[in-house]
Image 1 (cartoon, helix red, strand yellow):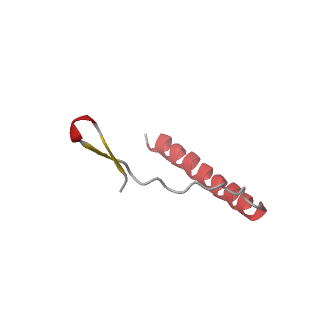
Image 2: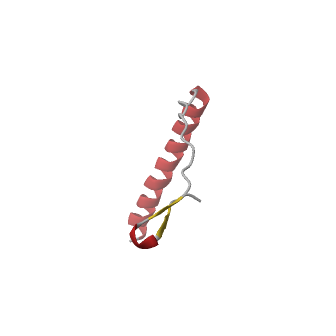
Image 3: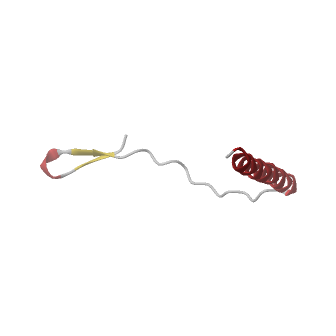
Length: 56
């Protein structure tokens, strides 16, 4: 683990940094999957809000 020595002899430990990589843009199949997942999530949230208003 990398560390440095500060004044007074104290050690300061640093976490190991992860490798940085360039993210790839989503392809058309992934874009379609994101749209479907987002639509399902929106319907779920709207239905939960509707049920909460109906019950109260």
